[in-house]
Image (cartoon, rainbow, N blue to C red; front, side, top):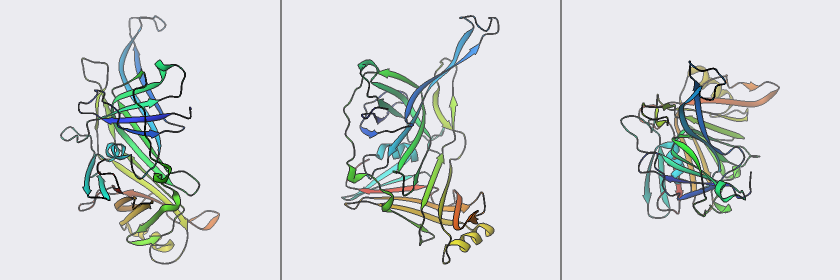
Length: 319
């Protein structure tokens, strides 16, 4: 992967119709734009006959691994969550919410994204891969002391084509990047000390191919989005610590989890999971490590709370 590889995105006004890219990100190993063609054998031809196959559908797929930053990611966050409200007069706040699946038949606040991957190649005709109609199928990230925080986003779109590079990028500065040392957590309002946190969102999108075309139509949600995650820490005593979390698991008690990254110049990313319940394996001491606790949870769409919310504070007026 070339040193100068990056991606640009633009918010479409008509699904599947390319627009100019307005936000750019450096992307790293694992990032890729691809075009998928599915073919089906015709029954009246031999399997190796060149006329024996026909295309059933075409679609674009993308995976982006983007360094997490305090600004310059607004359109990508909006694509992930589905809704954003900008407020303030400097510093500004941007509230990204996900009360329901953002891609439904009756309400689709986000039409789609044009995503362009710029490659560090000598052939100008192959410098860029562009996907239109991109919708986020899932996203996630983790905080660990030894890993640079990355937002991992998966998309499905109408198609991906090779084009000549169309834009020059601008990126967030190093000072705007999130560092694990800037992250704190609270559980039901009580500060907890953890050495890892991870969350994953599945938008449950369904691919659709209508009659009259071989390209997929705009992907729609086939159910509510699913939010799961985990955190790990030393087993200690006290409020919301080892045994208290074990007891909450046994009783099926719901809790609120907030994860905050605080950067320079009053920049903040606050991730709020209003209602979580410990699921999966019991949060008992890790085998062979009796002072360690691994906790797995599922976020719930409870009335009066948001299943997953991001409040971004920075010096940028709009996303």
